[in-house]
Length: 114
Length: 110
Image 1 (spheres, chains in turn orange, blue):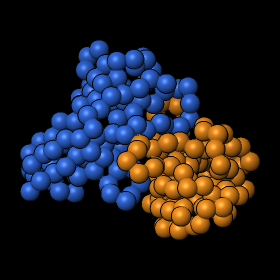
Image 2 (image 1 turned 90 degrees about the horizontal axis):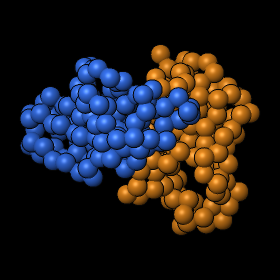
Image 3 (image 1 turned 180 degrees about the vertical axis):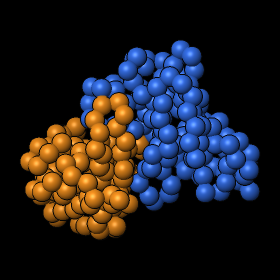
C-alpha cells in the first residue's frame, strides 16, 4: 500500500531563517506531488506541483521554492522566512490526472515564524 | 476554473443525517464533483466523487442535481468523529491539481 511521510510535524523558526520541509511517498512510482499551505482560518492554497523529477510548477509567486530531486521526494524550501509564511503545510500525491484524480495528503507541518 | 460555494458552517446532532450543500453553477460538462474532509490538525482525506449520477460509498452519499449546478453530500448518521471541514471541489481536465476553498465546518453535538 502507498504511504506518504511528511516531517517535521511542528516547526518554530525565526524570521529570516531558512526552511526545508521534506515529503516522501512509498509504494508507488511516478506520482504527481503537491505542496499546499493553509493559513489560519483560510482554505487550502496550492503552492507547487510536480509531475516528474525536476519538473516544478508554481501556482503562487512567493518566498518559497520547491524541488523534486528523486521520483518520490518533494522538498519545500525558503532562503529567508517571513512572518506571512506561517501556516499549516501539506504535501500530497496522486497517480491519475484529469477529472478522476484523487489526492492523498500527508499529516502536515505546522510552521510558526516568529 | 469553475468555483464552488458552500456555507461556512453547519451544525448537526449526533446520529442524525447531515446534508451538506454545494453550489457550482459554472460547472462544465467534464467536471467531476469531488468531496474531501479535513479533521482537526490533519490533512484532508478523500470522501467521494461523481459526475452525473448519485454515488454511494462506505463514508457517504453524493446527490447530484439533474442540471449539475449543485450537489449534496449526505452523511447518513453523523457521529462525533464526523466533525470536520468538508470541501466540495470541481476537478476539470484543465489542470493536474485541485484547488480547495474554505469548505463547510461541520459541528456535531451529542
